[in-house]
Image 1 (cartoon, rainbow, N blue to C red):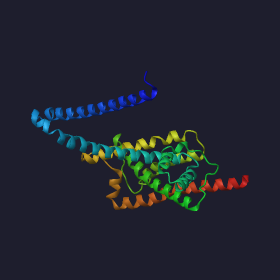
Image 2: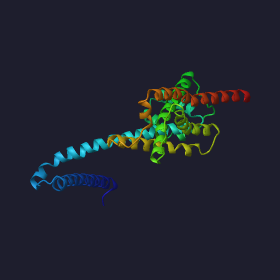
Image 3: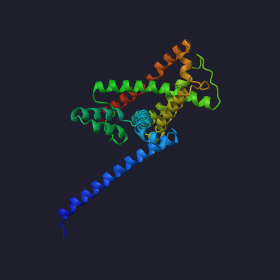
Amino acid sequence: MPSSREAQPSSEEHRQKSRTAIGQSIVFLLLLWAFVFNVVVKEQSGIVAFFEIIDTITENLVMGSIVTVLMGVGIVSVFTITKLYTQIISKTSSFRILEQVFMDVAQTKDWKLFFKRLLHFEDEPDPEEVVPEHLSSILISLSILYLMSWVYVLLFSEALFFVSWSAGVDLPITVANLELLPTLALAIPFSARVMAYLRYPYAQDYADFMPGAVFVLLLVGSLGYLFHSDDQQFFLVRVWHDQLLLKEFLRSGLTLAFVPVFSEMLFWMFDIFLSEEEE
């Protein structure tokens, strides 16, 4: 009767043979697909199709896979950044948490854990204090907030204009009404931050639609550019080609993007004064 020690290597050997057989089957299916592709799609003879298998795999599969992977990485990157931003603005003590995350990675140098914590930012425990501890963290946090406010002014201005254009509503852009669209565009993410200030329980649910909106906007804009669509209208393109509109847009954008920064500063000051009174 074989012992357990003798049975274990035979089980491992069987598993290794099974993996080898699966690998060989995958390679065979890949070669068979390339051969059929050459015969059916490229209309090659059997002999030519056989010798062109490697070229087909290299040109059609590998190059196509590289383009697809790059597009997928771009989509994932945009979604991840916008998702992280929505998690930040919908959490009251988000900038204090970010400060702690960066301080932890500065000590441990564990970048894998760092990115994992950013991906699961909404699961981070709420600290007792809201305001970042260091002055450098405060300046960096406000700078990030100002930069992201500018990004959303641009993206959602274009998104709102696109939605109106898709619905058949023509928005005549003039110097007098130019500020209306960026104001409404900034109000979308800023309202999520206000919900966080008020401890609204569904702030994260409200903010979760923004990554999808940004993705659809970039996808439609990219398709319109790639297919050279003359029908599609772009808000930022109109503004860019008109010097008066561009000057007014930059002027209003500089002011509007600072509104979330100003409100964050007021919220931090209120929290500091409230803490001092409690003490």
